[in-house]
Image (cartoon, rainbow, N blue to C red; front, side):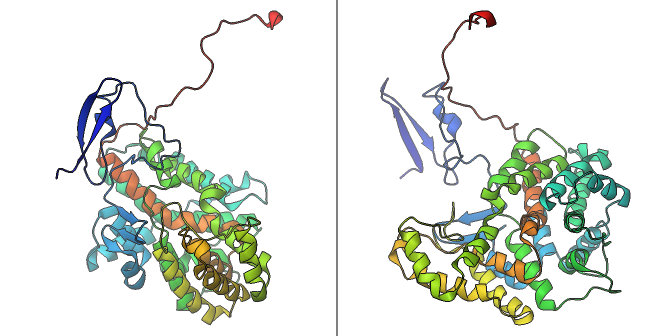
Length: 422
């Protein structure tokens, strides 16, 4: 049996066979049979707008792999910087390659103090950290004008390193500005996650220190959020990047997409829900109210996953390790009970509503001392590696500029009427 489909235009009786390649069919082939006819898919939910070798996501079976490596193995054995290298370069690094990559990233963490002050000082004192991050990333494009030379692979890699290195610095600076605290410079003797925690929380101590379980938990969260195939922000990066915009403008566009609560605000919504439930004893009543349409079960279900999100299992384990250090959060008991009751109820199981990555991540972030305003920023830091890997891949593929079509549904032709006669 050939791997193909056959379409027939019932208006003419003509048919066309189209091959199936990598689980998809070439939409351009359809126009040979039905020219002038467009696919209508407003959210691109049934459209593959890119061919990518970076992340494999099988939502039906709960599988997530970066460059072929299962996310479970990477979370257990790898580090975020090693995973970032994997996403960008396509292969896991050797010992020497990882040492060189880590050195390059570490030595580019500094942001020119004049730039940082001038950008942030232009904003109101209580500006949202994500707005500050988005604008400061875009501003870096004026600081590194050579970044526009996107056809030069060496210059391109230099900007990739700079962005991965400077995102934690910009993120921490945005947060410190929003709460009226002085900036903390990077400490190149610290690892990636601990350095970020230092820039976030250091006060007057000569050297920031934190338990290894805390920095490791954050590193795992960075690994889990590093990429997730063609989501809203990655698509935004690809669309803007397809115009051959510089990488800073491209990543700023991705940050702007992530800023929206439908994309980057889910874990904050979970915390609000858990706090609204109030106590362990109220869980079953809350579940009943959800089933009767009086509320929503946040952190369950996913646009792509129709099974248990593999990242949720990893984060749940990490949550226990964090709480061993920080002390138990009473919201964890509510979350565990909520998961237990929901997964024992056919109402949720039949609808394939399982916990996703956001169900436990907010609890960890809160335990680490992060306020809810910084949650989306925490998402943007690791996802920068994923955005850049897709941007680089798109350029190597020499993709055309993104230009979707539309189905016009407005009025027909009409003549202009002078204003006095309207």
